[in-house]
Image 1 (cartoon, rainbow, N blue to C red):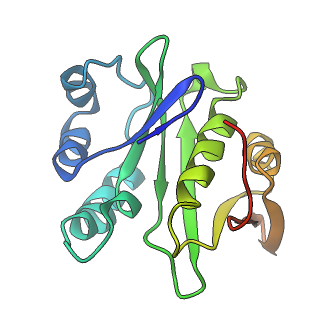
Image 2 (image 1 turned 180 degrees about the vertical axis):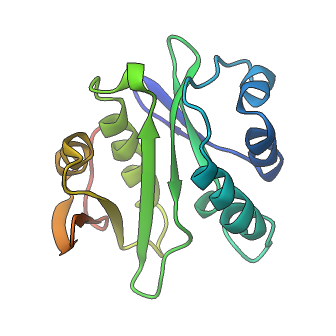
Length: 174
């Protein structure tokens, strides 16, 4: 779990991830939280079923890199979005992240704060040397979040751009 000034960023356990897949609203109620206003789309459901759940169940793998982390706004005790890693660090020490925020909580600095917290969390893992994030070149909000956290443009692939941040010897305030 990661805590920042306004947020709690909490990884879901395997059972919670299954509950989230079946009914995000029921999971939120079980956790005593206001549910996210975003519906879980088919792409996310498929990723949970085919990628996250098989890996989170493997005892040889770090479950924190194979689950969804919910973003909880402290004052409202509401789930306002989510973030996940796309697996454990590769041979270069890179991990990829993906994230999303509910519409009503966008442009308020929550995702910037979330990524700052996760960067600090990854600094404690000796295997993580850098974080990458892929976004569309038209997604100005996502680009702004990454740049505010010190990510730099690493490469372009058509309309997709990849940002990268070295996590070693980098300390960000919460």
